[in-house]
Amino acid sequence: MGSHSRVHYMDNLRAFAMLLGIFFHAVLAYSPLLHYLWPVADSENSAVVDMLAFFSHTFRMPLFFIIAGFFTALLIQKRGLAAMVKNRLMRITLPFSIFLPLVMTSFVVIFGWAINDVENKSPMLAMISMTAQMPQPPEQPITTSHLWFLYNLTFFYVVTTVLVKFVRIDWMAKVQAFPKIFLIAAPLLLVPAYMTQHLPLPAPEQFTPQLWSFGSYGLFFMLGYGLFKYENFLDKLTPYWGWMLIAGVTAYGVFYQQLPATINMQDMMVNIATAPDFDLNQAFLAALQAYTGVYISLVLLVLGRKFFNQQNAAVKIIADSSYWIYIIHLPVLWTIQFALLDTQLPLIVEFLISSIGTLIIGFISYLLLVKYTPIGWLLNGKISKPTAQTAEA
Image (cartoon, rainbow, N blue to C red):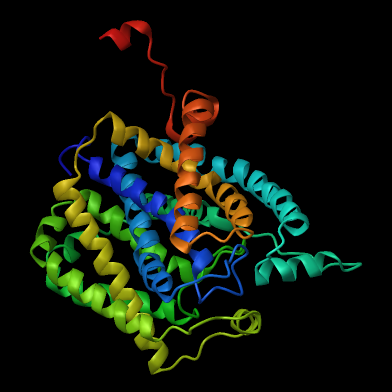
């Protein structure tokens, strides 16, 4: 990569991936597939929700991990390996360690309120309410919740440090020389990892490292790392972006047709306890999701580099705030959606109230409580308050 400054499109796409997660989680309240499993599931739902939501699910986190790998390589080249490790510990691992206990505590408070005050409980909330009344309710497993990606990234940085220190293989030099072969073969590398999971892919939220996520999100991270040095590889892929878009959407359409209409609690328990069948059908479904995730992620990178490789003050503040908003969004979102369970508003109105309301609360809290405070320094680096002189300038 010739310049450290021309990565605005990566910043913008990273913010897009984070903020898309808010809309993804908001719309799951109206998902028929997760109606019995999502805590804020509304009585009204639509198959269109599942079609759109799980399409974004195929590429949102793959895109994010590609970008994370790209910026990891940038940090190493710009500041060195030791500085990268220190930076990532401060920006990723420390925020995870600080905010996960706070998020989990907020969930306890929110669910306690919802159990007592929400009348039209979702199936999952009703089950939680019933369980809470037991003399000795079963202990709930502690997970990494929606911050699992920070936990995974910490492991990826450890692996990256070891590889950079002891392995000298420029694998991307060979890959970037054959773009057509890459487009055909690269998604197949994800199939073994995807085959080990019931589809659509769950979030690897457990504290025990999930090896399948190393074989999926880890590969996306590696791709992003390689793209830093060979960013012109995106130029080689540009002529194929239309075909990738068509192929990715088509693959998803076939994949979506194979999803169940709904998953109940018994189905979920079976899925947790048993691995999917290792057969041709599972391999086919895994391949469909792999091709969708790879192709749509690459399309967004190609188009983002072409059309969104610039940044103004408004875009920058949105990009900067996206990290904070994503960290706090689930407690805020669920509070709003629990309250909406007792209303009779149309689906689209409830969705807009909850998603836009979460964004507004997150953005205002970032401006007032985070941007110029130690929290903001932790997440984005220190930003100095504008003085009267700078404002006049």
